[in-house]
Length: 590
Image 1 (cartoon, rainbow, N blue to C red):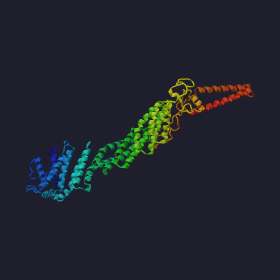
Image 2 (spheres, helix red, strand yellow):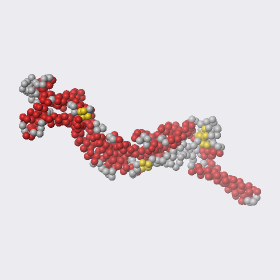
Image 3 (cartoon, one colour):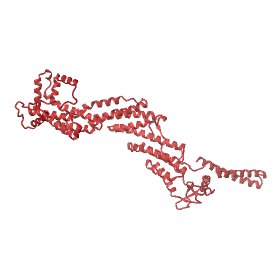
Image 4 (cartoon, rainbow, N blue to C red):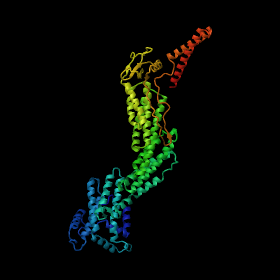
């Protein structure tokens, strides 16, 4: 078993220096082959066969009378041999082959621990050396320390494997072998290792990783730092501690106090940096859309995965939910503002884009805080914002085919009964309209002026008993629409109402900003003209006629019969004009 690589002169000098230290020399001799006359000077393969024969012999002594402890020496040498082979095992052995090597090594080490002859041989060697510095050393002390020494060595191998990429399985196998050795060696009682020998070994070799994590978390900037510093601190903390946390969780277990405390320390520190960064940016409207806010949410997601204890995870989830809520509400606010700047035909695309954007985050929010009132408020805000966009689109274009699927998509998002009622009402209204009401008049031609009209300009009317369904359609151009509505009103009929988009809910207030929608009007009033039209011209002519009648009454004399008739006619006409002007003013306000 030649050293690999071949030791240089520095290694040789260090070995000679170790020989000068009697304690280290005894330890080194213990972990190498002890001399045995039967195998001295032979090849390793031949020596192995002789050791196995002696170790398996039932006699307490060897056939050679000069070596009464030959069996004990053979057992010791086989333990050293198999342990060296396990340490130097190459990848071609495979997982099962290397496990077999370790199991054989530990089997012989257990025999060494139980064989009093091995320890008598060690005490004899210490006596032969006769060095005053060995007075405090004896076989009993080394016998008690041997399990910890072997487990410490194996724990370092487990850590090395855990640090390797995709080395978790190999590390777990090493830990499993360590626990198996402790139990089989009689170091455990009722499944609990005596004095925690395995746990102590694992803690010792992982202590530097836990200390490094603690040092990094204590060095994070305070909440008063600028957002860029906080953003970089959270990112670097996650990056620099990821490997250390993985080692602790692999070697010690995810629920071990050391690994769980370290994970919670990182999660808490990242949470502090992310929240401080988001608060600083969200407080200013100009930086609410800064990419660092999105990165703060990503850092909180990583902290949530890292968190081991329930209270830390709950804190991170609560902050992440607030951040998601504010982001979703800001999307709703911006979508409505864009629709206000360019109302009408693009509203349906804006509504679909809003839903596509917020639905993934809304699902995440519902996962984080499924029963929180704030989550229901955010759901209603999204539903009402999209409902408003669809409503403005359909009230402007009368395009039911695009709007109706949008309402049906929005309905499951709404949480409050008031919001759901508004959406259901709009769905019912559009469904009735899509069924195709009976048309009164000539299709494609305005019933009053005869101008050509499209399908979207059919005025839907309820009541009056024209049809069994109670719904009729009257072709009506935009110029005649108000006059037609006035005539229908006098006839006791009512046009179908425009769709609604407000539910009367209050916007959610959270974090540093309040996102609210427009809440003044509950109808959009699409399709109504704000100008005069033919009816306005008729009012003007009537007003001129009234003026002529008043002038004629003054000429013939107010006391004459003709003058009284003319004055009365002017009064009636004036009353009618004033009434219609008031109606026009009310329509303008709507």
